[in-house]
Image (cartoon, rainbow, N blue to C red; front, side, top):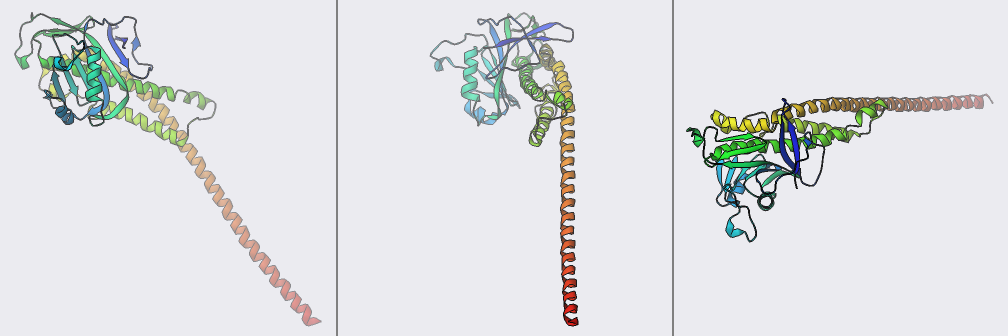
Amino acid sequence: MTTPLRFFHCSCVPRILTRSVATITSKPIRKPSAPKADSNAEYVRVFSTAEGYHLKQLLQKLPGSKYLAEEVLYLQDYPSKQSLSGNHSISQLNEIFIFSSGSVVTWGLSPSEGDRFVSEMIRMPEIEKSRFEERETEELPLVIQENKFPHHTLLGLTKRCAHISNDKIHISQSTSTFVRLAYSQGLARSAKLAVLETRLEKYLESVSTVPKSLSQGKINFSRKEILMKIGQLMDFRQSLNYNEHNFLELPEIYWNNPELEKYFEEMAQALDIYPRIRIFNTKINYASEVQSTLREVLNENTGHRLEWIIIWLIAVEVLLALGRHWDEYTEQELKEAKVSNNIETMNT
């Protein structure tokens, strides 16, 4: 079941995207809206399930699949009619893009077919790297139009052979597979970003009590918990900006294909990816301030602990010194008493 969400561009023009998270409900950065998806419509769906996939193992597991790019597997006509005993979608498109970054995008498959593919082919330890506890799913309506656009020669693309308007993906019957790849990669990046957004919201919620606790002169985190919070925040920043599949670099396939890049950027704009990245980094900056405060508290507590250790060591040293002096004093007293006794004995 999916929950429709409304996005807002900087120009305040609304965009609709339906999104669902398996197993948990969190506070998304995006706000929900009321409209429900049409179950009879064609959709492009993305499933983000892990930090990455082992494409070589998946290639051997999926007969008919092939590399469309270095980090993308492509599969047509899934599921085959021979393998199905029940109802299946009848679509002009039936294809799957699998990205090594940990996302699967389906074109023309029904929700049950997409779920079946992900469950049977993807959600396995030998395929997934660092599996997500919650699976992120997003979708956009798809409209397939007649061939009415003039052709463009580059990569088999057509000029205006596809576009996004009225919250839907519009393509022609002759639209190049590479155009759908560009749109798919934009969707995959959006779903992966949504996973980080959900995790960051949960992180911020977990440290939301810090300001109030500090105002009361106390902190409710142990040393181990503070170190874990610092590590989690570093992981967020690394995943967004520095990992192999980060959100700042343009995928390599578009470096020499500016026409193809336009479709990728069109999807990124439609899903507000860049504004969401800015918001995400702003929230990380706030979380960094909280992290700095926690680190200062940790350092201060450590400093106080060391001070008390030093004080106790000095106290112990003083006690030992007093003990030594007492032993020397009592020994001297005994010697003097013995000498006095000897003198008295001689005098008598």
